[in-house]
Amino acid sequence: MSKERLYLYDTTLRDGAQTTGVDFSLEDKRRIAAVLDGLGVDYIEGGYPGANATDTAFFAAKPAFKSARFTAFGMTKRAGRSISNDPGFQALVQSAADSVCLVAKSWDYHVRVALGISNEENLAGIAESVQAVIASGREAMLDCEHFFDGYKGNREYALAVAQAALDAGARWIVLCDTNGGTLPHEVERIVSDVASRIPGSRLGIHTHNDTENAVANTLAAVRAGVRQIQGTLNGLGERCGNANMSSIIPTLLLKTEFAERFETGITAERLRTLTHASRVLDDVLNQSPDRHAPYVGESAFATKAGIHASAILKEPETYEHVPPETVGNERRLLVSKQAGKSNVLAALERVGLAIDKDDPRVVALVDEVKNREASGYAYEGAEASFELLARRHLTNVPKYFSVDSFRVIVERRHNALGEQVTVSEATVKVFVNGDKEPLWSVGSGNGPVNALDRALRRDLGRYQKHIDTIELVDYKVRILTGGTEAVTRVLVETLDQRSGERWFTVGVSPNIIDASFEALLDSINYKLLKDGAEAA
Image 1 (cartoon, rainbow, N blue to C red):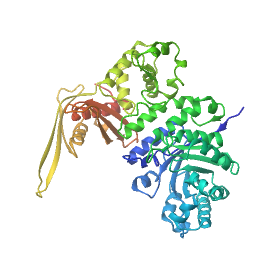
Image 2 (image 1 turned 135 degrees about the horizontal axis):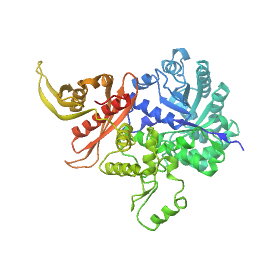
Image 3 (image 1 turned 90 degrees about the horizontal axis):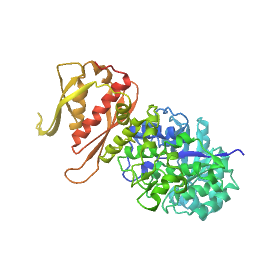
Image 4 (image 1 turned 180 degrees about the vertical axis):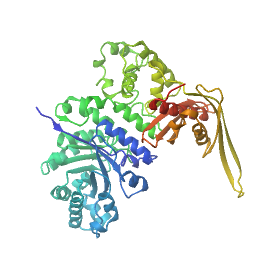
């Protein structure tokens, strides 16, 4: 029996950006988008072009996605304005997006109070806007804002909004539980009614988590007929968050009721990158992952000492609702050292290091990773550092140079204009492999780490040609323990301006400068390794 296709629409970069404390940079958006595309979602909503400088820059050029459709979000045309005379709408149809998701009022109360127009004028604006998107050569869809509240208040008008979008040619009409107050039994009943008027193959669902039911509401909507699912990675979103794709995706693929009826663009192989994707997002946000998150949390498959521990080793399938490796996670028996190998093997596969799982060097690497993680390292978001560590254990990494010493000075003083300024300066003494004389470099910068980075990259002798085009583009610090002797983890992102490649490295130390320097060293060594630079 053929399966019905479900389409996954990720809005982490737009709805997720509404989360309190979240502010994605342009580089953050590009990195997360690449991770989502690798996961296999069908749509990646990148933001609202024209609304702010970051989103406008993001939509200036289409990312090189493998399969996802690059999607812009925005409003239908403003009342009283033509399509051509609405700058916000024009930003949508002039962007590099493949698809445009418009948002419109579907609750007649909001049409009257918020927009101040007639119901008929709202319907006409929706139809005209959808048609304009299609005329621009892009796929059009409509998010029906507050649809469930609107349906309860005026069923016929809410349905008329959905029908107007369908008649105008919208590919998807998305039913939004915007305030997150609808319960699963209500969602299933209302969606079933809508699906009797509008084909389920054209319907989508967008839920918020204000009653802790966003995932349940989404699954109920699928049962009732919708075939597009909107949500965010890790459930990011305003207030209490959006439907959590990190839970929805594996449920659809691994639970019999859904797996036997439906298929998505995510293969079993791609599903194994889910935990990695979740933790990359946490690293970008510079926050600790939720240990107890379903499927992807560190404790999702953890068992403490007690009656279950030994039994899980013998019959894990009877104690775990899904095998942890299917989502890229791992079993953790807190009274043993059984955990870790599958994750390391998966990471080795990602960086292109093929090795037999029973090779004793793998065990040694697992132990080393465990020891480092216990002291504060985290490699999910720093694959360049992990690759260097792994290659040092399994193959070889040449020693290109060694740093004999460095010094960083931060001085607050008056400049020539009499203004108080803080100046950072760093000096580095380096021995390039094979050279007897050291190289001394001095760099100044915006803070001690920037100065240290500039000094280190100023002169590496014969290797300078390999690093001339790289630059530090992001720097995140996390304090892992409290007190005056706190352990600090630093995550550094480096960009090669020539190739466009980016990589991430990590350093850990009670001293923030030491941790930063370790990450910077890994970054340069990774570049030299990838370039195939020869050691003397």
